Length: 506
Image (cartoon, rainbow, N blue to C red; front, side):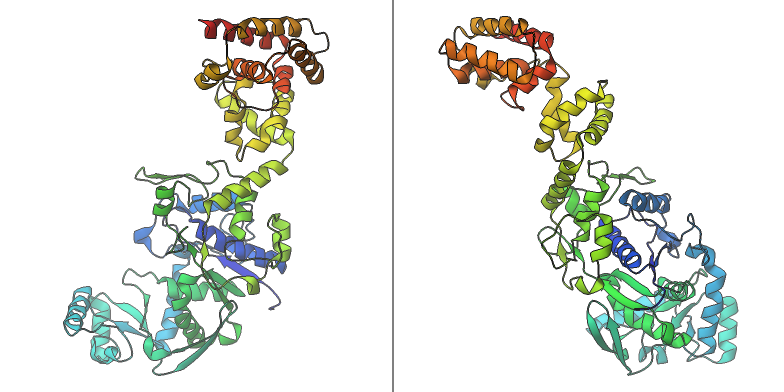
């Protein structure tokens, strides 16, 4: 392990942060904190054509909601800034010149039209055109043109700078998760490092920034694995091989079917979010988020942490601190992790059950306020204690408890037909009298008094109890009937039963 662990999460601000990106950030964060290191947020915005207004802020807000604390960034500060690549433009120019001077990069003047023509010619011959160590010898670049021609073109024409891949070299690399990787350089193409607009490509900026920011470990998605040979060769070309970071490529998040990478379309089709927060694009397009769908951030993070990693134990519920202590790259899986939204809901339910009744009551009171309902927090806490086991989300508490806050306006027709037999109204009126005369209005006393009346008169227990419940709730659902009566209070209970008698008997 390197002495000073410094990792970075380096998203591009091209839209909302996918949960696959959140997982990458999380694994970086857990690794850094496990080893007493720093977690850096760097915004990689070199592709200005894909830049989306508000995306950077969305990324920062998402990480904050998830509890992933940033040690260095534009907002957090730090000694290795700027932390936005578009603000580091002058730095890259210096290093691209170094590569050209050392012979590891070259100017290329081929136009897009010319390269398209070549690709079509190759297609006709059932071949694939690649700008590589073989084809570059016949193309328009500073390797084939005279110095005078190059200088003229640099002044008058658009150009790019390409990396000069070494010919026929066996490259041996190591990935912390995947082990040793071998590749022959003849299979690689001469990637563009510097574009005609004066901006570096991801490959160049990424390497330079990681080196200058003293990044010790590059932990990123599997989709970047094909870029690893180029990046290793760039470190060698700059003479930075001895300070090169360790690489770890994370497995993909897969569709629920396990077939292919998880996308927004999968979420839209199956009804679950793939972004942490609600997103509204500049063009007005929107996407739902886990926060707005009622997920607790710690439940979301716990769920996400186990998509591609496991502790090697039976434990499933982890606090952030427990995740930090248990995490290691060696326990990250090589194969993709299938997304299971039902499991995400299960985690949220587990976290909801762990919360105190008062904590949930405070959260639920905010939901009630949005419905124009103001109620005593003590009363809400009592209700939450009765119904929380039936809910997986705070926003589900309403459907389990609405009858505590408003009288039923309709009654379950099936229950009425099955249970509300002739004479039930008179029997309920007798129960109203019993309830009205109770001086001790506790749950147990209400229960004992009503049950005694039913048993003494040899009444049908199911008919009476269901008729009472439908009068108070509107249906046959809900928690303990006598706790409902106790919480509603004497007068509210009497009013509801009398209203039901009147409406049903009509």
